[in-house]
Image (cartoon, rainbow, N blue to C red; front, side, top):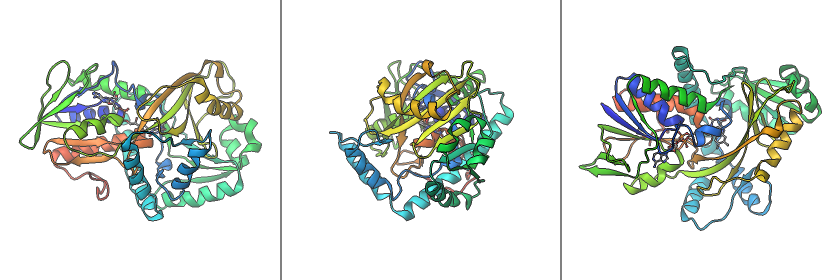
Length: 413
Ligand SMILES: Cc1cc2nc3c(=O)[nH]c(=O)nc-3n(C[C@H](O)[C@H](O)[C@H](O)COP(=O)(O)OP(=O)(O)OC[C@H]3O[C@@H](n4cnc5c(N)ncnc54)[C@H](O)[C@@H]3O)c2cc1C
């Protein structure tokens, strides 16, 4: 078939790759000048099944409420005139029961773990350099009480096959000597040795180049402005350069998916949740981190991409606004600098903000709605780099009429 993939983030590009592997002719449409220039550019780069916990948990309603009154929270809920914020928030709150949080977390973990296996297959056969680090990820806590809660929490993922190792303060520093300066601030950590990190944009751009080299079309600077529908099918995509037609279409436009879907009567509750990141050259600093870490108290994630650090933080409801100012980064920079004082050349940090395409369940949408040849692969939220590879394979399977390798109950559209 000739398949048109809408959106060139990591989800769209991995989908194009898997479809091409199945023998399809693929055309990928991306509005920006390069693929992976939105959420897939500046994220923390963690391939982290160990981070599969949903945000829609029993604790979330109070956290959201508090954020209305307190400044400098990692989560910043802001009132706005956008009615979609409220319908999305209502659906999100409905997912916050203990039972649903557990169910959604396990579904997410299943997809994330499968996705990591697909990634490993891909890099086993394709020469892609993306500053991969496979030493695991350290989820560390600053008090014994928080560590104990974290361990109890992590047992859920462990019951689903996640490998975890609990480390005390000395164990943390033994594994990550770069944290020696911060030894007294850390009570201990949960180390997920099979989690990994890598630069998502480098990966996505290299994969897109492979797709193009094998005859796929990667059309950048091509905005999708609408879909033509007739006879219960999509008959074409409208772009400023003219229509693009195919036999099937995959919607993978991240935070941009909901607006396009709405035009054709599909309601996708995907709301943008803004996050911030710093990319910092290591320079000639002597003690950069040697593996990924998450400061669970401050909700700051830190990854090492070769000669750079990537630091991310914050979940903010700011609509589709991606603007940022130096003050937005002050806290995350301070936390990282205190943890790794000799870890990077902090004065040369590059600032970025982007939008996580969040769904109320924190699970992406797959499969078809009422149009026979339009497939969804969108809404990957806060761990979309992790879930992209498996989601792409699942989408290729669904298009081919094959049964995906993991049970889809609870995951289909
Ligand atoms: C601060 C931060 C930290 C994160 N950390 C991690 C992490 O450590 N691990 C992890 O797994 N995930 C992480 N994520 C989440 C991850 O970045 C996203 O889930 C993932 O990138 C989503 O990929 P996507 O392809 O769906 O969306 P995007 O990367 O946003 O791609 C969508 C693409 O569609 C294009 N598009 C949109 N509208 C149109 C249109 N009309 N026409 C043509 N093209 C269009 C966009 O230009 C864009 O390129 C993080 C996110 C943030 C913001």
